[in-house]
Every structure is written in C-alpha cells, then in structure tokens.
Length: 250
Image (cartoon, rainbow, N blue to C red; front, side, top):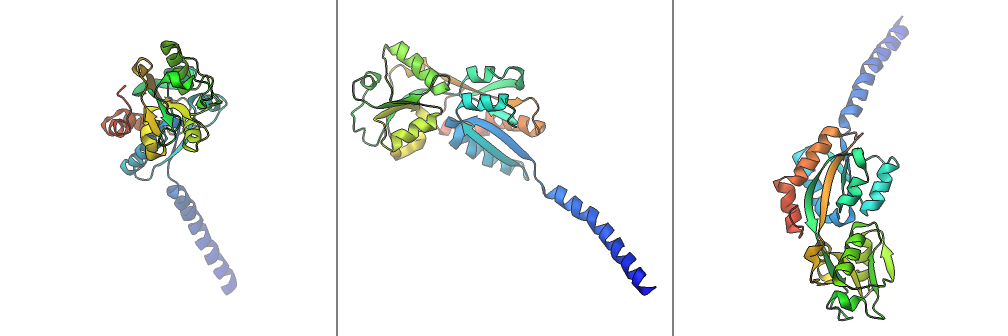
C-alpha cells in the first residue's frame, strides 16, 4: 500500500504545481505596444518610448521605423500595429477608417545636408541643380520627397538626383558616408546628426511645412495602451522631447 500512496501524493503535488506554473507564465508576460512611426521620428520616439515605459511599469514599447508610405503599405497588408505616426497627412489619410481620430503632434521643414565641411560648397537650392552635383532625395510618395518636389516648384529649381530613397534616414546615410554632395532632409535630421553632416538652411522652406499626425489603429491588440501613448505624445512631456529635437508645434 505504501507505493500507491506515494504515487498518489506525487500526482497531487504535480496537479497543484501545474496551475501555479501556468499562472506564473501568464503573469510574467508584459503587455507590448507596437508603434509604426516615420523614420524621421526614430530618435524622439525612442526617447518617448522609454519615458512611456517608465510611466507604465511592465509595459514594453516596440517600434518599426520606416518611410511613412512603406509603413502604410505594411498596415494595409495586415501588419500588426497599435499606433501609427506619419510624417504627413496624406499617408495617414490613405488608411481611411483604420486610423482612429488622427491628431497632429508636430511639424517639420526641409534643410540641405552635406558631408562635414560642405566640400561641394552648397549654399542654396539652386546649387543642387548644377551639373555634376550629386544630390540624394526621398522618392515620390514619401513625405520628404513630396515636400522636396513642392519646394522645387516654389523656388523654380529642377534637381536631377542621383538616387531617390524610401526614407529620410536613407538619404541622410548617403550624405554621412560621402556618397552624395548633398541631400534634402528635415531640419530635425540635421540637428540629430550633429557633426556627421553640415546643414544649409533653405530660404522659403517655411512655405512647405509637413504636419505629423498620430493615431491608434482599428484592430489594435492594446487599445487602451495605444490611446495612452497617443495622449503622451501630444501631451506636455512628449511635446517637450519633440521641441528639443527641433520639431515645430502642430
């Protein structure tokens, strides 16, 4: 009789431990908020994400940074995301009802970025149109590309770029590595790059202002957290981070 009793006792212990183990696994998993954001927001949103996590213990914020048009395509194809922050209104509008009550939270304008010291001596948009000058811009449909096209029209300048990139960070990267004499990026990108580039302000850029909207997405897995993140970005603490990076008020 001793052996059966020991077996029963062991079985009882296992039966008790299994629910506890399952409970432990469930409680150890933290809620994860997935944010799709324009490439030009990488630095600021990374900081905001850290602050948001600190204000919401146990929460993990993950980001996917890319060109706004690329992110829209991914969302339309079913990529899981809770929040989308675009570098322009146009790409947010493409999502239709998927984007829940978009809110503007920042503005930005273009600036010319050159390798350190500006070896090609670029001083204006007109210089970008000169023969032999290697210029990199964002592609059409990408917010920084559409802004560049509008700026060319406003200033009567026609640029023949050596390449057109899908995100502003790709443009900046080619300038930083010396693959281009100049690139059209946002003022915030120039500020964030520090000594890696030299910035050349463009006369008239304030006529082409990109407004950045943010929205929770229909079907988000973390609906409450998503709204809290949006509120944080448009609130005082989020705005403070954005202002410090050179973004304008919405």
